[in-house]
Length: 402
Length: 238
Ligand SMILES: Nc1ncnc2c1ncn2[C@@H]1O[C@H](COP(=O)(O)OP(=O)(O)O)[C@@H](O)[C@H]1O
Ligand SMILES: [Mg+2]
Image (cartoon, rainbow over all chains, first blue to last red; front, side, top):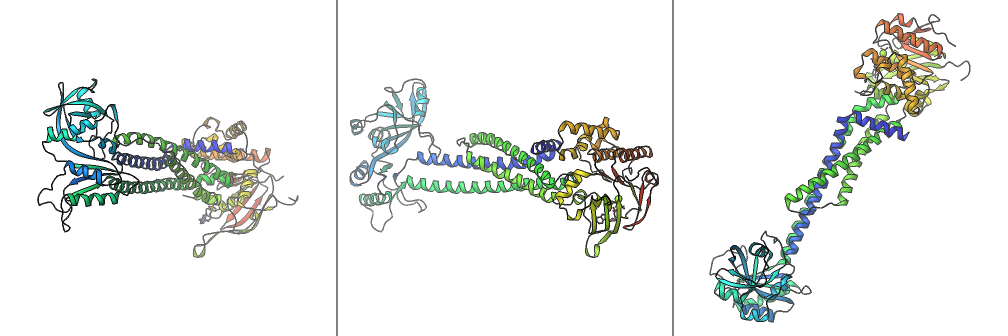
């Protein structure tokens, strides 16, 4: 009987192409929408998380100036000096690296190629704090740092644009008015969380930059890496106290410098990402509901249409459970078919959209499974229960149904 | 079933449609016995309750009161599935409005009762083609109802009713959509089924010519049996 019923059901599906198609369509839309949305939401979350990770963890950046939103005006705050860096390094506990940053932008020239790069005058502690590897060549020696020798480490973008296939280590590159020996190649870091290219960088000992490029002893920012075992807040307080003292800020005056904590920034971003995930999940749940109502509608309409058919089958001797089995098989076949097509569409949509959105392409088994199961269940339930009502009618009442 | 028990026995059968102020008594107390092998024509003005009684006899509907015994079994005592099995096993029904499955070929329509009897595919095909042949529609086996005329649909409906070789064939105005030539052919078919296969035939008709083929004529009036004529026509109770 089951086999005959399956054959009967398949025949009915084929006979009513439009109705079957509409039923399938409801499931397809439900499944495709949910899977696509959740997958892309998850991919976006992961990409934000990757960018957060690229900020480095537990880094403090100290820069002169008033805090945000406190109104500018007044004299420009005094810049830091190398002595401030030294004071932090020697007097603050619980930090693993302290590095000055003297930044400027110059045009780099090599052979006939020229390229605008960001020059960062710093110390080898900068690479320690940033956990930035040298893939070829070597870093600065203490002697080179003390002497402010004109040696440099270049990022991959600089290398690609100036050197092409040529081996850069040991060559000299022109940076603005000065010439500099390339001693190392930095590992690729990609985009920063804020869209700038981390690899379009030249690192030099800060003294070299100060003496030859900026022409003063100013340090724009100080980077401090916090030992993860220590409390970042306490270290920030200690640095604030030290800087206030060194900069002779009266007890009644505001700080004239800021400390940014990457951990704080990443916590904020992570919080925003969690909100995003929750919103996407809510939208997905709604679209599943809408898809479900679509399926429900088609199934209800088709059962109403089919009440006469149910009447005919009962009248010629079918018992209710045989008619129901047929409807159940039909609903299962259509819903599964729709579910599979929906999953396929979602796969293609995710592939296309993830490329457009610059997020990683993912395939998440659990959401595929859940969306498929829920839509199929809705299809089966709403195919089955209205049919059950129709099959419980007197045959003559089912036949009279308009 | 004791020897004296008629195949069909109605006693005091009533049918009320609607309820309260809208209630309407379509059958007001039918007493009627039909012996196995009889050929019965039911006549009467439109709205007199003929179709209502046929539906009850066909176990498609249940009476509001009275008793209906089929082969000695009170049908009121059966549940919906048991009535389905009665229809499947013993009854063939030709509806006034055909009630064929749309988008389904004549042959598949005719085969349908055999599907629920669990007949294998090949046997369904054979029996289905036989039945179509008896109503002269073998060449139209693959046509769907939409591709057939009203008369042809009527004959598909008859083929579907006789394909199982039922004990009782119930036909509600089986010649209502046919010209007189076709009508006579159908009546000859019913007569043959009644005579050679011993099928008990009950049919509703408006035309005295058609009723002339029957052995018993039951006249309906206002939901009651007005009068019964016996012994005239072709069929003779066994
Ligand atoms: N489902 C129904 N609901 C209400 N009234 C009905 C229904 N079916 C039939 N009737 C009424 O019952 C009466 C008998 O109908 P029916 O048995 O079809 O008559 P006939 O077949 O003799 O023309 C008619 O007055 C008809 O209007
Ligand atoms: Mg009628």
